[in-house]
Length: 390
Picture (cartoon, rainbow, N blue to C red):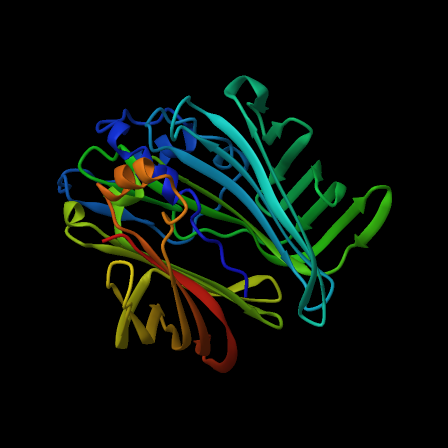
């Protein structure tokens, strides 16, 4: 399994004291449309309005940068590729206001060459851009940062670029075509004014990768593997939005599953919002935002902040007559302090608003699915992350 850790967390916390407390509604067309479809009469300052309607179709305009003015605004487009033998690759484009300066761009990633599940070599890259050094198309979807570019639409994504590192120079030509999906309208809104948001779209649920990777003029790998691409954006600091964030993404053969859950803070009455989606051969066969979570057999971290996480989890999801049950057994817990490597002053500032611990969990899981009257069971093992902020 490949997990995506929210590595923007440290910057969000460090920027928290500068964050804009009353952002204006974004003027982005797709966000305005989503807001316009929400009945607001019964909303309060503590309301969480998440993923309304069934899975909506979306297009290229929904992928363009939101360019929100809030200090906590961060947006990413990320592609992940994995092979059982050969290589795995992660490439991420980001735009963020966190820290000094607004609308800063960034491209980062990691390529690992592997054989028989053993990592032979790792190549990492990370390049940052000021607002004037990157651009995006006003029609369609295309973001350009230096010689890096991501473009396309839901269901068809292309990434090109070059990177230099200690182990040489790499060039990438990367393309996926498949099904796109999002939970409802893809967005959770917070409060009475619907000014704060958390939005995510899966541009490619799971598809065969067409990629050429070249290092110092030599082709390392051409095609092969499977991957997914997602898009995420928020203008609400993690410390304000959630006490706990859970993200699981795994695959077993042609089956993939994804579960994302956020347990909100007291500001939003601890209301959780979440989704669960299952696909087969790249096509979504079940999705739901109507979930029931049961937890037990808790592990308590003896260090850091003494948080507890469950070692047994059971998720029941429903959608009409269809249902899914996911049982998870944690086999190993690895707690980490995301702030551990910060300078003392920066760490003190971050800890003034939250005291995070990230738990990397190795797990065995079992999925029992009933769709259109047909039953299926899939078992697998992998890992996922629970981040506790307080």
